[in-house]
Image (cartoon, rainbow, N blue to C red):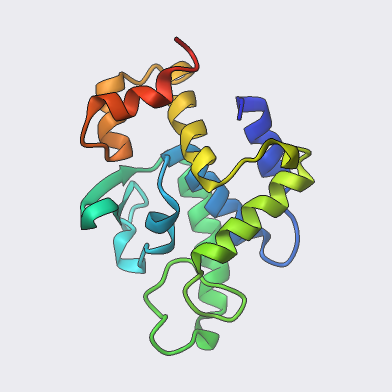
Length: 173
C-alpha cells in the first residue's frame, strides 16, 4: 500500500470494535510485525510508558519493537476500552493484549477477516492483500519515506539474513 492507501485503510475503520481494530491496523502499518506476533502479545509485553513492546517471532525469537506516536495513541485508546471490559474476560485470557468479541485472545483468523473487511471498505479489496502485505507496506514505507537503513530494517523486521529484508526494498529500487 502507498501512504495514501494506508491512510484510507485506517479511515475505513468503524463499528463496535473500531478502537481495537484501529490499534491492530496501526501496529501492522507502523511496526511491520507478523500476524502471529500481534496475536501473541500479552499485556506484560507492552512497556508501561508505551515506548516499546516485546514480540515473539519465528523460531520463538523475541525482539523489541519501538512504538511511534501513532502506535502509542492507538494502544492507549484501546487499553481504555479493554479496561472497561476487564470483568468480562474469560479465564485464561486475562493476559492477552487483543481480545475478541468473545472476550478471549483474538485469533489469527479473526484478525485476517478484520483486515480483509477494512481493505474492502477502503476500496482496496480487489488487490489480494493480506496481513503479511501490511508488513511489506510498513517495511517499504520505512525504507522509502522514513529513510530507515536496510540493516536497521532487518532488525526491525526480525530477519536473520539481509537478503530477506532486501525483498521488501525492491519497490523503490
